[in-house]
Length: 316
Image (cartoon, rainbow, N blue to C red):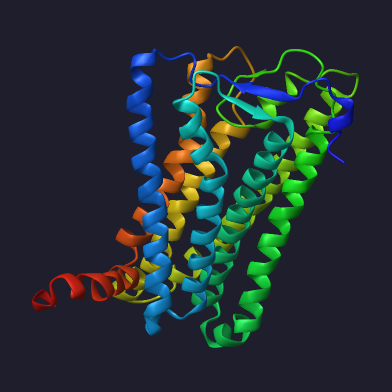
């Protein structure tokens, strides 16, 4: 299905970090390793806190837990391999391993976008239709929304991966990136339909991202309109504070995604493309648990109660 039998290329060479002096590679390795470990730890702590704290057994934190899971899988699909390649003098990846990495990176990347959209809908229902919240956001409904997000991400991953790896790769095999991403792989493909497939994949990805972003903006348009009708300043602040962490993560997520998918075409340096790629694959997942932990008061209090009480109970 991936067209492996029609390709003369059996492996790819990932040269994303070859543009940087070798003296910088150990520093990159340590930095990205620490950021990755923090990302894993932060998301695991959030999941454990939500699981152990009964007051957080609500739809909003159920979606946050699902978001943390998708983020763990997304980073696992890319960063460990990147760390190994940083220490390798000849970083190669087999044809099938490259296809597998692309599938999982797109699956969990789009699952992340769909879950952020679902979380926006959850905040819309909570603020604009509070009396119907328990009905609209029932446990069965929340489970269905998460399942649809994961299913949608899987479909996107399969569509993109199948389209790209149905192309022929019969020439150079040096990928100008640190993982198997669409644009640098398309440049290595040969055949008459390469341009058509590339435009089709780009259109599908951009349409999905912009649709999610539009739905989130629509949710917040109704949310802002409802919050402005609240008579007290304290009430407006309390209502908006429940959305602050989600809104910041949305801005970061789609801000870096737009840099990747909507950047103007033109000559780009290999080092510039590599650093740009790390903002979305390393930095965004790193920032997400920090934002939710610091900007969400309920979660922050639960974290203190769950973990700090074990370390210094006299302070609580």
